[in-house]
Image 1 (cartoon, rainbow, N blue to C red):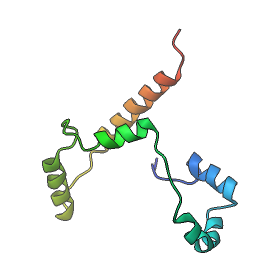
Image 2 (image 1 turned 30 degrees about the vertical axis):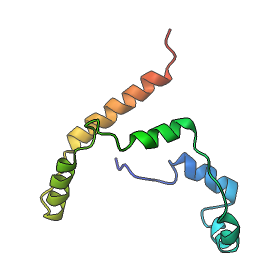
Image 3 (image 1 turned 180 degrees about the vertical axis):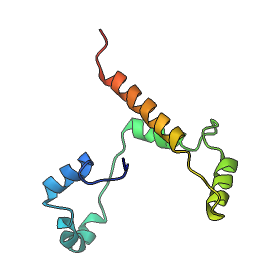
Image 4 (image 1 turned 60 degrees about the horizontal axis):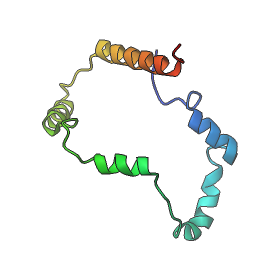
Amino acid sequence: MKIGNSPELNAYTKLSNERTGGADAGKAKAGKAGAADAGSQVELSSTASSLIAGAGSEDGSFDTEKVSRIAKAIEEGKFTINADAIADKLIANASEMVSRAQPSH
């Protein structure tokens, strides 16, 4: 089974295409509306703001040394992917999501 970013499975893409008339519909409008959009404002929710503020915190969830080792292994062609470990994590995550979605009795 191939896991990817399939447009058929991506609900956001489907909804976006339905609202705009297709994936390419906005391309023609983008050139005309560029100047009007320059002054647009976006407001973030308090939850989003707190997530952004916490992104740089040192809680041990980001190991720069490990990232460097992996990047070096990829560059040298020595990085191997453990498909079993990935499958196990996917199954565990899916199981957790299903258990959250089911109402508890």
